[in-house]
Image 1 (cartoon, one colour):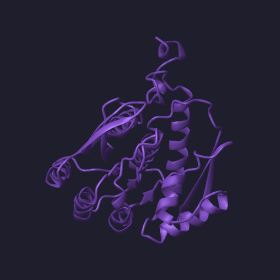
Image 2 (cartoon, rainbow, N blue to C red):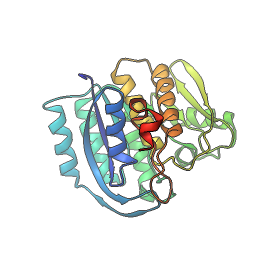
Image 3 (tube, one colour):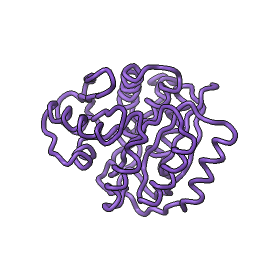
Length: 268
């Protein structure tokens, strides 16, 4: 496990999303995971109770601590709630210029609670998106960023083109908010690719966006090309949802370590 991945995101004390989901994912995929916590989020499967942002100075110090010692093969960036937080992260990413930066523009928790301040969208577009080797918005996030309504696969492709022009090298628009099979659209230097996976009938999808983006970062760290990293990450997330855990009163967590346990052991 000598490949290294860093997650820069908010924490989730209930363990299903955020930093905790990212580190579980990286460990499950055989990558050494490190973290920079930008916000402490008091949340569970049902609601977000409160958010305490870490100061920009300490965010920078955490990033410096990683790069002056261990370094990275990939970076996943998740929840960045304020423009000040975004500026701190963007400054250090610009300084260290890491490879394989996967950015998940987290705006809402699975239960709909906001995780990004409304006045942060412009900062996200101008400061963060140009740092992305891959941006992974879901449909509502892609609509916010692109400024257009998304109702069809062609709309997803058009939104990806708009977002790519904002500076992201590649864009993955996730179609999981639609009915039917979960279809995602990737726009990369190879053009458009689509990924279709069966929709799994479960409410336990807490942290799936965090898990997918950190899985893609992990597979990029392991040396996979972008389209292959996305394919492998979607395969992993689908399995984690299929083996999701019946925990909590709301949207339960996925099972990041499903590959390591038999179905009988999972139910113990």
